Image 1 (cartoon, helix red, strand yellow):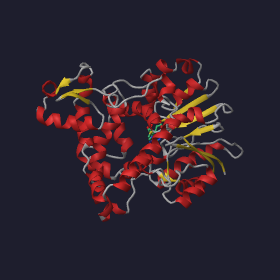
Image 2 (cartoon, rainbow, N blue to C red; image 1 turned 90 degrees about the vertical axis):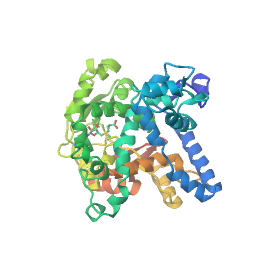
Image 3 (cartoon, helix red, strand yellow; image 1 turned 180 degrees about the vertical axis):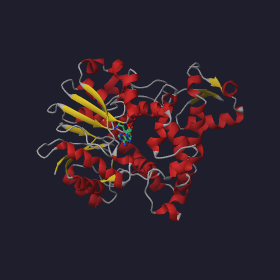
Length: 425
Ligand SMILES: C[S@@+](CC[C@H](N)C(=O)[O-])C[C@H]1O[C@@H](n2cnc3c(N)ncnc32)[C@H](O)[C@@H]1O
């Protein structure tokens, strides 16, 4: 696949991105990586003594090391030294004791993030490039390394303490409780509303995250040509809508969100720079919509909700598609897709979902959910747990869509994220 794109296959020491790294449609590559990661980890777990694997699961400090790398912009510094920089020099630049720093750098280099080109001399690698201050992915790294990791430390207490164990409210969840000392109140999006730079980075990040999670492949995989109007509910600054508008010039798009992300979409020039024709031709409209209390414009062809339902507990999650359903009208057949369907570990159940809706399942002897090949889905579910929200399995989606008056037609598997195609029931 790499060779087909530009004739080269990246090595662990590659120092530049490969064109495929940022391709919108990585379905084929992601399917291969899913099998590779799932198979390699399953083989290691099968063959290694369990004590070895158990310690490997918990003795993990990578995120603390990455946190240092991000906070001190180590990659920005290393990029000025293509032949590498001695740790003593690096230590002067970031004011960290050199012997301690070299140990952190070596752990990261063992992961392929930096390379040790000579003893104690470190250089950038393709993996470390995503930690650059201009790369949006680093904001996700920051969110996981800082507020999310603090929330993760409270999961056990959240499950055991009577006041939180059976409680689902987005304002009092592990991640918010753990970060309360920093004056954070309300749910995650209230916190973001109060922090302009965090929110702006977050919305830039979502654009890149949709490639990483595979959901941007909907742009090429879903048969859009027969539709002419799209509503992007909770569309942020247009992570989906902007590439969509570039690709499908016959479609009129309405992006709905809270006031501040919409202001960012209008003011940051992101549309004017990346898709000026959509703005000039009035093919895109930005509108405020509070999705718990308001329904979008009626009678449109597609109502797209990406990474929306997973942000909320069941009670709140139901209100959003119910409001969308009101807009769909009695006779319309618009498909409103969502994404990330947590896979079944039970082979019989997985086979049922595969035959009924087209969900994919790994062949034996792999675990039917592709094992660690789909690990981000399960990690993401625990991330959402920390917000008292959740990723959902298919039966949970069906329950939600039944209650909202929607009928699931088909699952489009994009090798990680999925599109669930619904019609009005
Ligand atoms: C995880 S982001 C998903 C963004 C976008 N759909 C995507 O996947 O690229 C969730 C979005 O929901 C928006 N949002 C949060 N609460 C909202 C509310 N009550 N009403 C409308 N939008 C809201 C956020 O501002 C944010 O843009």
